[in-house]
Image (cartoon, rainbow over all chains, first blue to last red; front, side, top):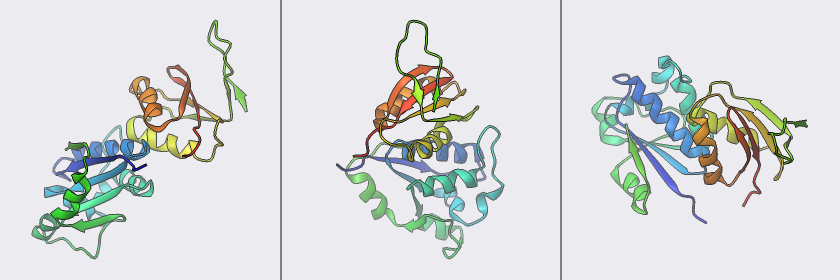
Length: 121
Length: 87
């Protein structure tokens, strides 16, 4: 039996910490529900893949974003980081947060190609 | 092992092997921690859960349908979940 896939697309970081946080809460619900879960970080969202960046993001009523991200990866979730978005912002690919993978479009298309629901923030 | 008070007119076996008070935790945080807490149980063993988040009323049945764990009792905020057999 192949595991059903679920994608969360996130385009925000400190410009909208509410969206960034809720995206990972939903991603955690997906991975907890036995889905092969992916968070696709693009546009401003790629900043979250930089080690330490999310450390001071803590929305009221939610766990700290750093913990939400770490728990997601620990449970088997994947984080894809849009390569051109990452490069455009001059970020350092040697300092990625655990579980983050810098990818081009083909990797995302491959994940979605067989059919995967996707929710966007 | 603990035994929940049975609902009126309910003679079901409400024995649990583990208990967790999740407080106000909800949504993905609750589900991920719940998954973690069910893992060490044997198939057929039960977790007694207290989840006060209002979303739990709909989320617990949905999560059990998705994962195959069995919802033995739902009387918000009290839930009794039976661990599934691993595939």
